[in-house]
Length: 158
Image 1: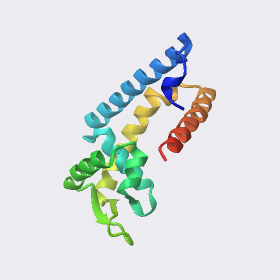
Image 2: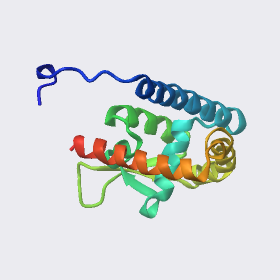
Image 3: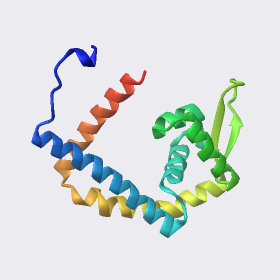
């Protein structure tokens, strides 16, 4: 449907409060998690997230295109990030087996060690600044809601 062909459904006060609270708190939360990881473990939040994705993948490796999707990143931005992480020895890029054009990012032993060392700092921060502020019911509702949002956005991106 053409967005210009119908009247705009402006947000109600309640909807605007929910939306703005989500946007601002998400930005502030990511900034706080980043700062605490950098201060405590000398690793950025986005580098930490790459390490987590790779460690969760089969064989500690993932196609770059899949990793970009998983992180909500562009292939170009991810390529620069992986380049920095590769120079630091945390990951390595290899040709994807069976696909001469595909590239896979692999977690190195040094990257796995950084992840092991950083995970407690990250989990403590996530608990302090997010999880422990919510009741069990709020966690369940948010989980269902954002699973639905993620599914919608994933389908729309195809």
